[in-house]
Amino acid sequence: MPFPDNPCIPYMRRVIEALLERGGKSYREFYPVVLDFDAGELKKPSDFGDCGREIDESDRVFQWESHIEEYERERELRRIYRQIDSVLRQIAPELNRLMIYTGRMEYFEDFVQTMYEENGLLVELSEKSAVSFPPGSFVIDFGWNAGGVPVRMQEDVFYLPVYQRPWEIVQNLDIAVPIGYNTVIVKGAAAVDDFSSEDRFEREFYLERVL
Image 1: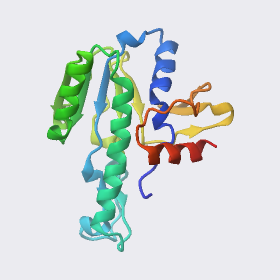
Image 2 (image 1 turned 45 degrees about the horizontal axis):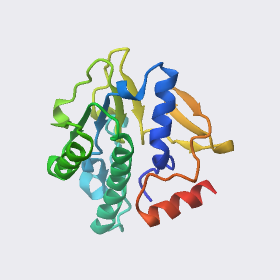
Image 3 (image 1 turned 90 degrees about the vertical axis):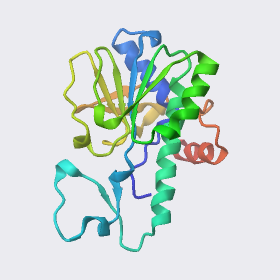
Image 4 (image 1 turned 30 degrees about the vertical axis):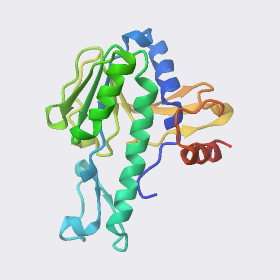
């Protein structure tokens, strides 16, 4: 898989609850602001014109080997989008508010309707070009390119990068979560008896990773 994997996707709610508890907040106070993955961050070398040029670190993208076909890129995008869907399904119940910044507004229309009908949750959608971080929000960033969104936030805004730095399941099923320049250990979050994903193949994949 050319794009970095996050083996802790099935346990994201547990991780978030543990981080909220450390910050003295309840789940009902949780205001997630989700930054969707941008398909433009997944490119082949031919997309750069001169493939030999050096790519600036502030504009990081994954370079594909020249033999990788477009369908493999689409397959990789679907995998990433499934992980985002999994996290949204986990965190949506019991929420009072949710903001999603995305470049694929139509994709989330069914999700918005379902959340309102099942949970009474009003999901706000906005274009990624208009990102802002309200006070007290909890930013969940699915982007790979850290320079793609200006991360200049108030001190009371929490920022959780999902892909920009590797997450690990360590001993005793603890999860090592990269926060800023530090790593936070969430105790026992990676239990194998409760998967958020409804996809059997995804369940088997993560079970293998843990065991």
